[in-house]
Image (tube, rainbow, N blue to C red; front, side, top):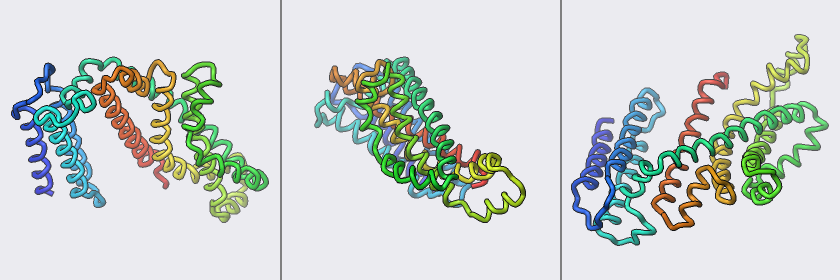
Length: 305
């Protein structure tokens, strides 16, 4: 483990040296401190992941170190090609110092965008989970309903929510409701399909035993069947939430006045690509944290899985 730690710290220090000490062919009028902070945060996340992961037998230090070494390498190449060698168009490929300075210059706008997007996302997720799980339990429990609605859900589930976006935006009274509806549609159908499948796959011996103990259908639904279906529902969220967030940002680029998608679209229209790249990086960071939150949910809430 030590050799991988040393290797990554060498890459980290080399990246800092390139940022600070290598003479710049392109004169930059902004501070490179935000870029140094960004690279240092990446290194801090790496060290923290190694510290936490070293306690687990399944942790792969080699793969983790390679990933972060590549990140440091990308920072170095990005800085060298844009500020030292000047081999790319500075408008289309702004220097990393310029991109990360946007976090200082427009931090309120970015923070507002993150909050606005997350509010719409979380409301859409909550509604889709409540309705998708509740309806899925009922359909899965009643064989006649399952035969009718399962094929319908199977057809509707794979349809990407981006397909609905333009129509939903035109149909809803305002963009906030439209964005929530897009998220709802993106998660509702996979959730209801997963729930129906889980209910139909439950061991019939469990049901028979529960009935022999005099447990009523409603109690069985919420005390036995619901806990059985939750792990699959939460597992599917890892994919559906990330995809739905990407759909949300795409929808925000169509007609929103707030959110990360609006942030990217606003500055893309003025060819301010340092702001655009900053917005793209922020979207990636938010997706990473969303996936981390889902993993924590699985580990700490669904303990029986």
